[in-house]
Image (tube, rainbow, N blue to C red; front, side):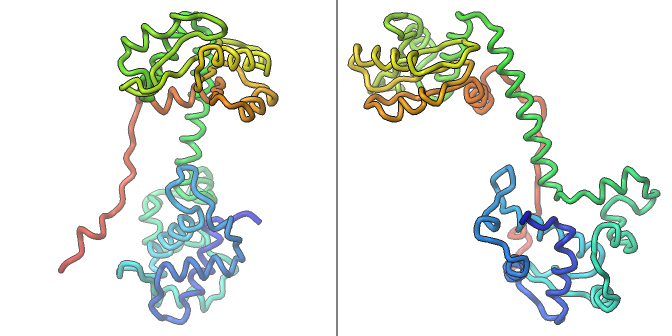
Length: 302
């Protein structure tokens, strides 16, 4: 079953606090996970950013909304307690608590920016979203990132073969290979022999050499092309190679490199674009947004 969204967690969370005792925040998260019978895999599900468990994030936002509505108190770090207003809500036995329900509380309206404006249909849709703000941010980021990857790959395919070779050099140097750009530039394109387009140092000291094949192709790269490259490595008594293409590799090609003694890394077009984005090659930072939180340790008094 899908994970409950943060609004579906509001009423169960408030009910957990119905005994009016102080509860550890971590204990309430685990209790809610048990009540929804989440599997270990569901509990380990991460936000797209990979920095927080999705369920924990959703419980956190359910807690924030209930606190802003005045229904629970967590002024003591790491602990929760229901408020008299929260007890009154439970006495009314609502079938659900969601953002629409919380509109009756002035504190929540102020928190949501609805205190001095009418709740238009557009705002109502916004406040009824099942996602937490982090999930919405991550989803938008992933959408923009995917569009950038696609546009970048199309741009690479429109470049000349000579520019593509320079791009490969720039990327490998940015990833820590090849020593200096000058050394890498002298190595690439020098051989053009037996299926090898260039060589590059594995590290700045040149302890090992990596052979490169770079193909700006539209067609799928099959096993014969990769096998030819592997044979060229053997002819050079080389152990490592990188095969880079703007297209894709066939399953047979991928299976082949897993079975041979030489270590050959296959980098298809999408992976190439991803590496370029990660290493800021051919892309620039358009905007930076910092997501901050309160530093609780700063406010701890000895």
